[in-house]
Image 1 (cartoon, rainbow, N blue to C red):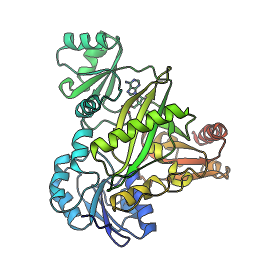
Image 2: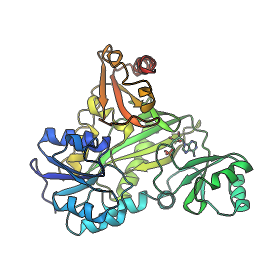
Image 3: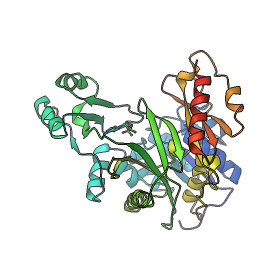
Image 4: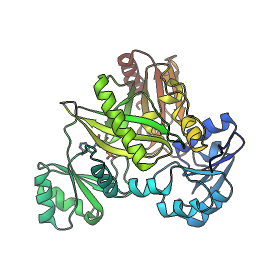
Length: 379
Ligand code: AMP
């Protein structure tokens, strides 16, 4: 199917979280219809979509019902079983396709894929059920390691630090070692991410690189553009483009990287979708990552990725709701700040509820504003 899907066409999304919601807002502005599959009709995407198919993301029948109503299917999360995408592909285009998910959604196959491409990543090994063998692996990795579940991990979920023999024993109850990998603890000086989009015809457009700070394994702030040397930027972009081409990816993709003290870059994770560290593009770039994803999956030319302003994004985590809705007037007191809330009914500790975007070419000043606003919102 090489004909582009023009406005008026219907886009289907598997998963109704905030990424689907922001894509739906962009798509509807452009004149597309959106239908979402989610277990809840009032999910963040459902609130702004033209229709909702209520069902679980691993329910083949529900996914095929969604596919029957749309012109193309895309994803809000990479944790949809790839076998469901294979079934949908028999009737409806899926972008990105099932093969991308098959490689990405299992940390083991993702790491093997990166090794095969010769791309740099943290030293890793499959986790052994046998504690003596596992202890030997941790020793090989420098005595400190992280056990990561192969499937369905995000924001540090499904991860356990292994620093001592007692950690190995304790981790047993939390993650099944047979379905996990172990990774060295990387002494990174900072984390960055490359957000790019790849079109159906293979064209790639790259956004200014983002610099990310995590708290408790959850993204806290993103600054863009990240202060980078030209050489560092080129190396990061080359890694991300190599991955996108090797996967034959279509749509927006994020590659998270660790930067070491000597400037080397290691791939941490690949997300074959729009990404939290790309939220700054929604307000600060000529084309947001959400519009860009719509263009890519619709088979249209990609938009300009130029930043119109420097920006800092501050994530709003459910903990801020501990004593009721936060006092938003403190955000509005900053004229350069933009509030985004995702319409989630139940705030929970660690849950991403929204973000604030600070538009300021002086990104040090924007970071200071972000921390000041966070302090004012904290109960
Ligand atoms: P992940 O879900 O794997 O992206 O991990 C979330 C965050 O945990 C990362 O952004 C890092 O801040 C931290 N992290 C993950 N893996 C490692 C590692 N091998 N070494 C040091 N920190 C890590």
